[in-house]
Amino acid sequence: MKYLEVNFRISCPEESMMQDARDILAAMAGDAGFETFEETEEGLKGYVQQALFESEVLEAVLEEFPFEGVSISYEIQEAEDQDWNAAWEAEGFEPIIIGDGQMVVHDGRHLPETPANINIEIDAKLAFGTGNHETTRMMLSALSTLTPSPSTILDCGTGTGILAIAALKLGAKKAVGYDIDEWSVDNARHNAVINRVDERFTPMLGDATLLDSMDETFDVVMANINRNILLNDLPRFVQKMHVGSTLLLSGFYEEDMLQLINKANELGLTLVRKCTENKWGCLVFIKN
Image 1 (tube, helix red, strand yellow):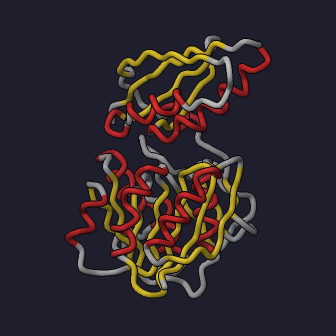
Image 2 (tube, helix red, strand yellow):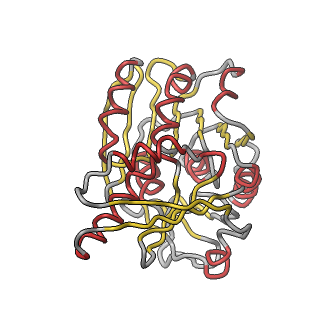
C-alpha cells in the first residue's frame, strides 16, 4: 500500500499549548484518513494511505481548529516504501488479554502464561489489527459478549482478519471479509490458516460495493474503519442484515458517536451498547 507523509507545522502563541494542539490535530485529522502520527519539534508528522486521503476534509479540519491564535501549515510528500510492521515483526508483542481473560491474542512467539478458552495467533504483515489498538480490543470484547453465538459473520475492512477469526473461534460457522488492500487480504488468509479456520473464512479484495452482488444476509456485521467510510457504507451494511442482526462499529473517536448513532437510527437500527477507551469509541446496534 502507498502512503503519504504529511508534516504539520504548528505555531502556538504559548509553548504550553503545543501538546494539546498536537493531540487535537491528531484526533481531528483522523477524519481525513490518517492512521498514525509521530511528534516532531515543529508539530506533528502524519501518515495516510494515498487511496484514503481526503484533502478537502483536512482543509476543513484546519479551518475549524478550535484553538485561537494557533496556525497550522503542512507539506505532503510520498512516504518511502517500507515494511510498516518491520519493528513489530522483529520484536513481536506481548499477549493481549481481552475482557475477563477468556480470550487472548498473541504472536505465536510470546505465549500467555495462563491458557485462555479462545487463543488467537496473529502474524501481522502490513495489515491493521493485532489487538494492540483500542478499537480492536473493544470490538473483540463486544464480539465475545454476543449471545447466542452468531452463525454467519461479515467483516468489513478485515485487515489481519482478527475479528472474523475471533468470531469463528467463538462458534460462528462462516465468515466473509473484505479489504481494499491486497496485502491485508493475503495476510487475513494467512492468519486464517494459522488459526485453522481457513475453510470457514473467505477474505475478498475490494470495498463495500462488493456487498451489492451478495444475496445473503449475516447474523453479525463488523466494521472497524474511520468515521467517514462508516457513514458512507452504513446503508450497504444494513442491507446485509436481517431482523435481529447485530452491527459492531469502531474506528472513530468518542465525539463522532452521536453522528453515527443518528445515521444508524435513520436506517432502522437500535443502539444497545456503547463504550470508549482513550477517546476511541465502539457502538453495538440491533436491526429491528
